[in-house]
Length: 427
Image (cartoon, rainbow, N blue to C red; front, side, top):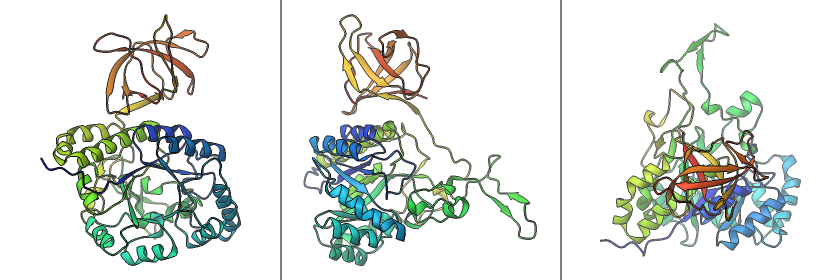
């Protein structure tokens, strides 16, 4: 069987919306995590990280050998510039450890970052429309370490870029997650319709809305565009998924495989990180092993929320088949119950997994423990206890602290979850 251990090992880059999700990404296989602070990132509605949370997250990631990149990728206006200088100084002076890199799209923001923190590693965001090797060469000469490719590039174009840039310069490319209808994500629809600027991090996602046609001389008279009785969502793209093409991505010379989703749940992050981690490792060990496990990758990746799948622009221009015309909703096969924060040993009750409940479940429910090593353990909820260790049949309040006793569904024996395991249930 063909050995592939001499292949370039790509980084698996995972998004995190909160400290909990960052720890999940690290535990479930990320090589690096990208996060947003409280300003200058393109996900204003995400929870984002306070300075204290960022410091804790960076320390946790570094303790596990994982890097953390901080987004500052808005297209800045004049009023942003002074604050940007202060923000980069705060990141520079973070203790005990700094972020590993900044993700920037705006040349003005880039120049401020270089002035304030000359030693900072800077990655150029996909928002900068990075579509050719001269652009990559330009950013390298300016001092950038990495460029994130525009989603509109094919694998053939990426190979050509790799052939024309320094070997030590890094290419980062999105391989999974939501696609934007606008070129490199530079959308004006949100600003036009709602006054919320997508390029300042406040996108309202108008590409997911339902539209109709209005004839100019008949204002207010809407002519529906029907695909079915729910209407047509003319800008609504399928989600990108390249789990079946890890060899092609690596052979193209991509250094970092990036997952989209800085507003997604810990369950989404754990599912995608674990699946791509195993796929990459399997391929690097042996290509036949990767092919043998393909059914498992596809089965697992479908257990997180998604809008059908496409390969985007990687194999040529997308067709009408890459759009979803009859719905703007996600497919969601599993429901996130909580992450195991710690495990408490109890002589009478057995091991108890402490979680903060995300969705309601009850004693007697058949659920699943999702473990970082790839195992999914089928269990029954044998007992639930509230924060005062009083037995309850279910938890009526979201975000309620619970202690969960579990038994293996096959053996009936007590099942001990581990810290950072996730609990989920089939929808």
